[in-house]
Structure formats: structure tokens, C-alpha cells
Image (cartoon, rainbow, N blue to C red):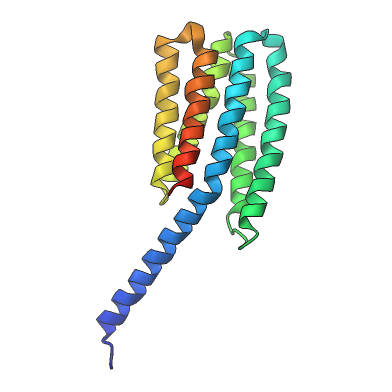
Length: 184
């Protein structure tokens, strides 16, 4: 049986599409539990911000961020032990860049309210997920849209309760998003 050039090209195209879809699905399976982890961290951290004085917020988040970073690295490495991810260094660089950006932004703009400190990470997280999601990971983009939109709803309509809003809606949104990614 002889295959024409167009049939061969079509078959190769199908193989490439299937490989790309499998890569996205694998990424979702790896990222899902990590988003659930960060959802729990957000729920605890923002909940603590709602009951603790502002002077304690930094210490709470330093501990939670350290736990989250270490756990994310462990989870990512164990999930990618099957096959080394070519993008792992890019993810680490993105996380470091985002953290530095938040620190620099707070240093320069010096928000005068605790609420501004609470909503900015939600907006930045939403933005990053939308940008990353535009490259073949549409579910991640949708999670970003929901997180950013929910953050703004809290800012405009629930400002007196923004810490608890971010704990429930932001943390819960990440947990739900992680479960949605995992199910892909």
C-alpha cells in the first residue's frame, strides 16, 4: 500500500496534535494538585489576615509561602520523574519573577491599606494564569479569569471582608480549579 504525500502529511499532523494534547493533559494532571495546595495555603493565609494584626501578616505568609514552594517543588519533581519537563526551569523563573515583582511593586507603590496588599496577589495570579493559559492551556486561562474577576468583585463589593472573601473565593477558586485541571 502506497501513501500519498498529502495522506502522510495529514497523518503527521494528527500525530503532532495528539502529542500536543497529551502534553497539555499531562501538564493539567501535574498542576492540578499544586493548585489545590495553593488554594489551601490561600485559604489559611487570607483567613489569618482577617483575624491577625497587619504586623503579623508577613510572618504568616513567609511560613505559608515556604511550605507551598517546597511542597510544589516536591510534587512537581515526583510528577515529572516519569519524564523530565523541559519547562521546569521556566516555571521556577516565572515564580521567582512574580515574587520579585510583587515585592518591588509594594516597595514602590507602598499601599496605604491592608486591602490593597490582599487583592494584588489575586490580580497578579489571575494575570499570570491567563497569560500562561493562552499557550494551549485554556483551562488555566479560565481559572485566571475567575480568580481575577472574583478578586475585583471582592474589591468593589466586599471590601470590609476582603480577607475572608479572598480566603473563600480565592482559595476555594484555586482548589476548584486544581480539581478541574486534575480531571482533564
